Length: 66
Image (cartoon, rainbow, N blue to C red):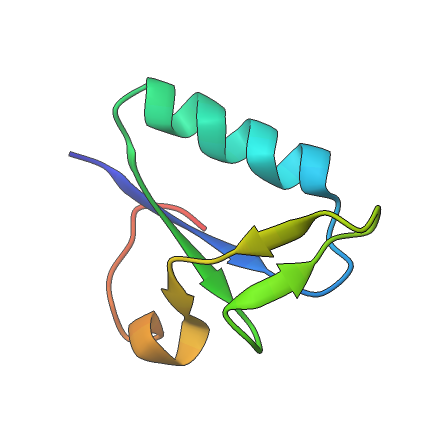
């Protein structure tokens, strides 16, 4: 099964991030969200998102797409 990593950073556009994550997961693609700093981030409109992991934990893992 294909796998994708989606980096999340403070101030990201929540609609873009959540829509992409949702569409990929509906297509049965494994999606891992990785924060650049803290596990919980605040998006551009104040929405709080929690990443699956920290980027440091998966930086050397292989993914089909970023």
